[in-house]
Length: 135
Image 1 (cartoon, one colour):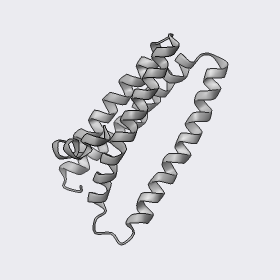
Image 2 (cartoon, rainbow, N blue to C red):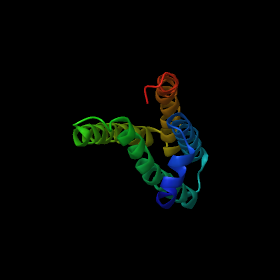
Image 3 (cartoon, one colour):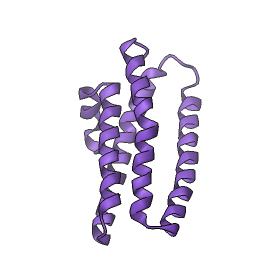
Image 4 (cartoon, rainbow, N blue to C red):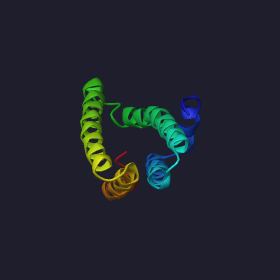
């Protein structure tokens, strides 16, 4: 993924990039919610991490394009990273609690649903702002 990040960034707009991520990660999380075989779960985690790592560099490239005129690039990028880590910590606790109380399938099903509920409105917002020329 990381090796092709430059080519992917050239082919996708900001809006289409987030749309691809939304569909891709929702599908992968829902697959995790339905699989019961442990080795398939391991492979799915490897695939999710590979996509997340590879696509994060493309996302960073889009962010740098948006904040290119700012004097506070490092601060803006590090604040985003800190927010991402805080959300990840909270979600990890929540998924762990659901897994402990029911099953890992339910944990990832709820994560996939929550992912859609939160990110679809953000995707619509980014799409509208991109059409207006904000990005």
